[in-house]
Image 1: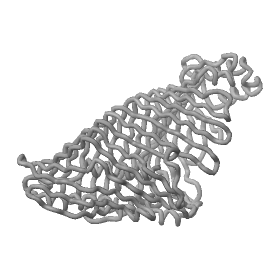
Image 2: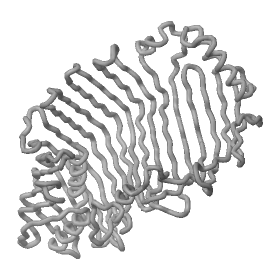
Image 3: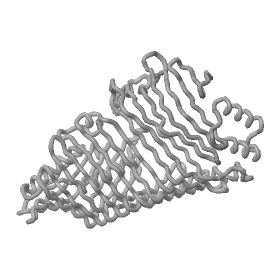
Image 4: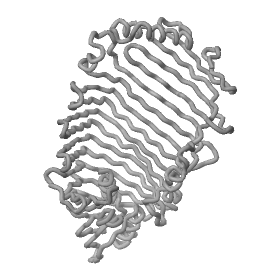
Length: 502
């Protein structure tokens, strides 16, 4: 499915960002420019051109990537009509149905073939501007991709139990393209709703899966840079070296997903409902960033391997990554963050390990925010180089680590902290850290008391935990609060609140 999604998004981009021409350009120039753009994405395009006045019609259009029978994709269009208008704008009309096919070789030596129809209703593309500074306005009632057949190793799968459909409703947006040393795109997109459904059957086991979902009020704003010269789009390292960059933020409001799975062990079901979220990605020679968040998520699951329904809510889940992707002698910035905020679960699940209700059932939070400087030892996106790296060799050297936030809040207790460390990589062996982290623990003694009272923690283990806290921490100003400063000096000594412990 990931390759299908990739081709769907790529073909959607071809529909919505197709370059056009204006008063200074003929329809022939427009078509030539469109072909250049498609080629820059790694596709090839063919068709027969016929001119009649202000209208250029291209018939028998085929947009291909690789070999559609062995490993690639193909979109077919019976015609594309480009019309020059009196106001200096150009319209591009595409067919309402565009057949799509894709083949993917498997590790077993077989090939999976998928055929689908790419459909649109009410699509309007209008372009204005100049050849080197183009503005596009587009809208559509619907754009969809719906499967028409699956074939695995020559065997046709039943259509009623193996199918997918992706539908976008109420689409509108703009794209600006500036042509200088590169093609630079800026895009804003709004989609009223997105719907998807997938069903699949495993003939060998008799199992099946059925997934469906929807998202409301989708938005996208992004920028990308494409090289003018032809570059193999399968070689991302070469693309980046030629100036390719991409970045954007995808947002959405209410969303829901349901999944039903049947297996020899029994049926499983899952339902996920969320209120809003975002996905942000940037990629360029400077590095890769990824930022994703989901708000107000409700999850319900049942499984034959678990005796009770699994129900939990999360106020927010979030993750962010920033990392270099190219080998460098100088250290580059990196970051890593994770947040699970406001986690609550059903009383039925609590009752499995706390039937007496001794523990506070307040929302739990786990958060980590790291940043620093690191030196990558190889080009991350070059698979040939990565394959030659000795498994015992570290992929990167960390020069500096900033612990901006550590937080664990659960059952009435909370641990928070921050700190910073620098690393000496000059000697052989493991790098030598030097720095400190400050920690504050609140409510730990109260939690231990409740664990003992509920029979969840033996008294002797509770005593050992209290002794350890006394060794590593000192009492704070507030009740049931402990503070600790853990330091590592340049001699490698570990100290807690000024006292050496190692």
